[in-house]
Amino acid sequence: MTFKVAIIGRPNVGKSTLFNRLVGRKLALVDDTPGVTRDRRVHAAKLYDLHFDVIDTAGFEDAAASTLPGRMRAQTEIAIREADLIFFTIDAKSGLMPDDKTFAEIVRKSGKPVVVVANKAEARGAQGGMLEAWELGLGEPIPVSAEHGQGLPDLRDAVIAALGEARAFGEEEGDADEETAASEVLIGEDITDPDAEPSYDDTKPMRIAVVGRPNAGKSTVINALIGEERLLTGPEAGITRDSISVDWDWHGRRLKLFDTAGMRRKARIHEKLEVMSVQDGLRAIRFAEIVIIVLDATIPFEKQDLQIADLIIREGRAPVIAFNKWDMIDHPQELLAELREKTERLLPQARGMQAVPVSAETGRGLDKLMDAVIKTHRVWNSRVSTGKLNRWLEGILAHHPPPAVAGRRLKIKYVTQAKTRPPGFVVSCSRPDAMPQSYVRYLSNSLREAFDMPGVPIRIALRTSENPFASRAKKRR
Image 1: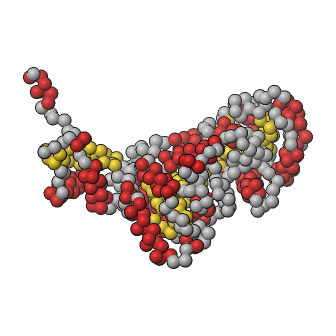
Image 2: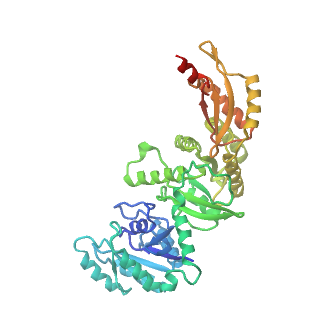
Image 3: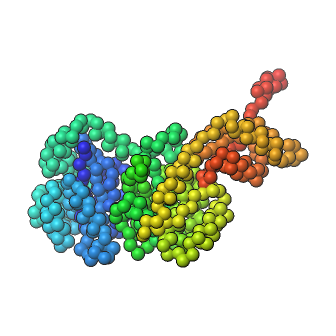
């Protein structure tokens, strides 16, 4: 059993940089702007021979509970309660601030073991800030540079001293080698090739990204699904910055939900931090299997909504639409019929896309949303035998054969499915370059209808079969 470490401290002391150093990858957004991190993020980490879960938290600020900084502080207090060990992080370069002493008292009252991490120790004048850290009364400060990886051996020794060897190495719960292997699997899980070709396996966690415009209610939807206030929410637009993953079980099915930052039109994005947030969201889409597009039902299908959906389809992910804020709609039946008609008309690239009205505030429609997710995931993983495909092709060619181009009829010989996730088919034909795109779309729509594959992208690649006698003809010449 691994232990949990919460990294806390006031804003801009380098908590996310230390988090990235411990997990071995740049997962958390890092910027010079104070207060970049808002939600708490948990990930498997490694410090030499120690394996544990590390929690990145928002900067600790003294603020009213109703304000955004106050809600961020509440998330950090939850992380303190969950943790077995606390890394109280200070900026050795700037020294102690009044808030550091205030928060040190809160940490002391928690009764959890504490390691004082004096970050940015490589800076000139950092020695003075390190000496000031003794005033916190939390023990010896450990000088580190999270950015450059300095001081980590001393940090490892401090963790063992704080927890004891048995707890630090997990000897109380079983074989440490088994824990090491499990931790390494967790660390590598997010970098799997999204276009890999595994067989359908509902025992693996399904990766679901939740995307949409700012203030559509993405974080609120996830909180409603998992039944707890795991993610920071509020009336302010653009609260979420990092893509935060949440593990969840739904009716025995393991899921990994990714909350993402709201995506505005590119022309409206000016700040570097927002650019980084959107890029993080795009990365979550690329590594997801299902993408839930959250639309505000009161103002649906804005231009940006359609661009987000088009991006998801081009990436080959499986989209599901959630019309959120349904509790604010006066005539739901009429609007639902109108929205579904618009879905078919405006997004023909994935005809039959699942679209579900939900209310994250009341919990209405969430079970139907998850049913739509599971159904779409199965379609996205579906495979059709070559025999069935070619029997279908015979009927297609008899009913609607390819057109003649430049006076010569195009011939289609056979079709086979080359991949799933999304379904991809190879059509062997004469003169692929001359095949009209309108006929390729006709094949795609016919495939979707004949083999019940609604709402997912379908890829069709045209190939020409080589003449087996061509090489002999060349030799004769």
